[in-house]
Image (cartoon, rainbow, N blue to C red; front, side):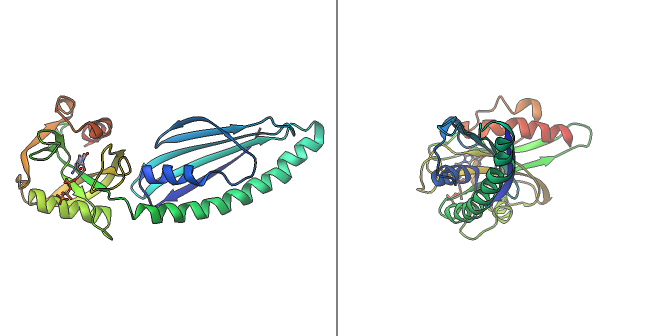
Length: 258
Ligand SMILES: Nc1nc2c([nH]c(=O)n2[C@H]2C[C@H](O)[C@@H](COP(=O)(O)OP(=O)(O)OP(=O)(O)O)O2)c(=O)[nH]1
């Protein structure tokens, strides 16, 4: 098989990056069948051998980063034509066609995903860590006081406002909810939120969590029922909002590092 790899950074949450990629389909006329799809992190399509004995696969992985969703794609193909002619077609003709088609497709895709992202309300959360420098670091967790998720634990934070940067939203939310100044340090991870956020499409929004340091003030629960500083070993036992649980290994790893 011959293959080409492509990497695109999309200014959109995981769910939007994934859904737009699938809605756009693929940039060539012959059909590919879905082999496997795990929303919103990967999909894999394959086609052939057809009457021309051509085989093609197209696999994508979607990874959350602080800069947006990184989409890594691999297209592989084989004409199945025998001998040197087959090799020439694979190496020269098809390679050029795949490259041209994918470049055009990816430019349009990144732009469309960024536009669609504007319609989806995003949630940011802060993993605020305080450490004693001797392996005893703790993260601040908050218990929701009202609404359908009352009593469940979460990362302080909230919805990003239109036109607001995610880190700016994090700083604003921590000031409003906790009365503290924080400085975002590094991206921790992103998970899809099952329900509707701010009346949007169910399952479209994601929660993006950043590690943050306290830069001023002591946290006070202005909007939560309770705040608690928790060590890595005690994180799992809390009654978390279910959507947050996949982030816990990354938060534990963060605490172990600090
Ligand atoms: N802050 C936060 N929200 C979370 C987490 N996990 C999770 O599913 N959510 C959901 C709950 C809500 O549907 C949404 C956040 O909304 P929110 O009500 O806290 O946002 P907000 O502070 O902007 O609130 P508001 O001004 O609109 O009332 O995200 C989490 O760890 N932290």
